[in-house]
Image 1 (tube, rainbow, N blue to C red):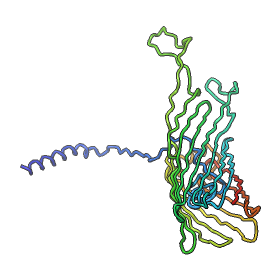
Image 2 (cartoon, helix red, strand yellow):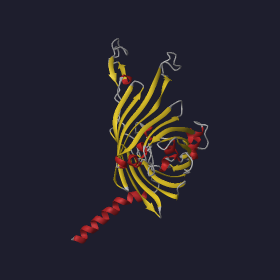
Image 3 (spheres, rainbow, N blue to C red):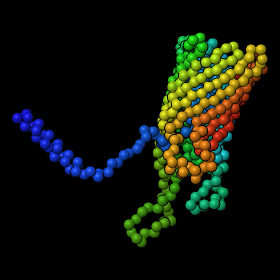
Image 4 (cartoon, one colour):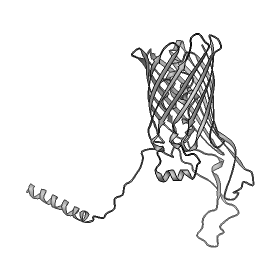
Length: 382
């Protein structure tokens, strides 16, 4: 009886599959979908970076961040700083927008702990308003955009080779007559040791964990006329009803970083550090990058200098032939393959045994958009 049942099941399966095999020309549909949150996140200015040194090495900087810029890239590095430092960064962005970042950080209790405060702002002002009713902006209406994040960082060196830290963030996203407020959290770790007598370090960082941003405000208000099935009912009443658009909450651009750095050359006056990092951003495909920094710090002179460079491979920017043609009509830039390339340099001056001034510069390429210049001034003291 068991064999009869098994035979019936096989026959039924063959009978059901027969019509499918007979349809040889059935089209095959392949769905292409990336597992990313592209176009679904808010406050993407939080990905722009901090400091000209950090931006020149951004794809691989988290493992060696031990200055004020660690407030952005890896808060665990704050307790590893040699002393207090203040830094201010300016990056004129595209389409008359600007990005500013500033921070102050210091180690405390001999480097057992560290604390810092940072602020970043992206935006523009007095942009003309174009509508269907006023395509030339004859009324001369304008609007402003100001996106701001304030971070409070804390770090702790648990042992002489391992430190950890976190940054609490308050985010305010003001777009014209709407605004949203949220909270974020960065968590970072740094492990540092020696390999073949030269420093090596590794880092793991999670950025921008937190609440969603949902905009509200008078910019979403409008008036509407109630619908009616009565043809004699006027399409526009004298007393329209007040209404408001409901905005959708958007997530923050969460970032996962895993990086490592090693000093190929490590002497009293010269250092050559090579580094690499894997980055996974929620709103784009995962990427990886590498970089190097050469630093010259002569013991007998009060000046120092550094050269830096990095490149981040970003698979989401590999355009097809059709996409290349579409972008060609939207931009004059024909070297979008340079997207992810950053170069930089820095100068330092020891004003005294306690005070030090520094100036850093970075050149960043943003693919089809072109390149931008970044400038940082800083002062540190021990």
